[in-house]
Length: 236
Ligand SMILES: *Cc1c(COP(=O)(O)O)cnc(C)c1O
Image (spheres, rainbow, N blue to C red):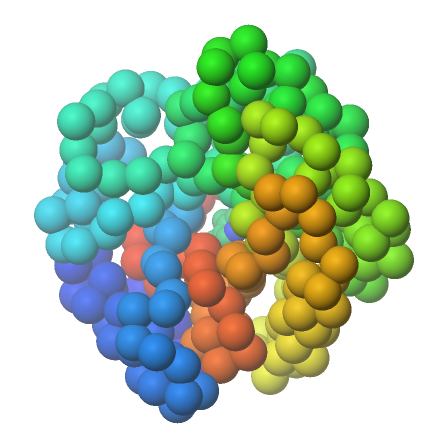
């Protein structure tokens, strides 16, 4: 799929939302069942304001130091913030309660740290579990095989609300290469839903980026994380 990065931010947003709508319909899914999370790393406040004015409602950051000044700068704006990057345990305290959803919980230890900090803050923190479907050594995330055993323990954390799964397929220039990967994530969520426990729900599937979000929607994504196709290519 072409990634049009030459348009204005508002043109790009209109294009991406239209592609999502078409892919949703193509898959026979209800309209509005997919949310666009704008990936905002290295994007400045002015561009974010333009994006919000053009219809963005969820901003996803993966670097905490970068995110906090933006959260501050856009206070009062009608947006949700999601944390989509790798989260270190020592940074959990600054993330809990600030972000509406953490997409990237990749270990039981991290979930337990979130539990502790959310309890202190008196909030319940919504999270997704990041899955490393192929067991790539360079990647963080739960292995599919360990999730079943861990769900009861995750479900027993009263201040952590598991809402679904997230995955990042290996990079490829051909979105069709990602399709089986997306499908496996959806099938894993379906399989695990049958034995999910406590507060655990696996309804949300965060998958698909600029190069393959339409395919992800066809395969069941409920959230796509799109940066380049909205804001253009990043430096650094
Ligand atoms: C940057 C990023 C994205 C968006 O990637 P693009 O290819 O720019 O759309 C999505 N998810 C995560 C975790 C990211 O870090």
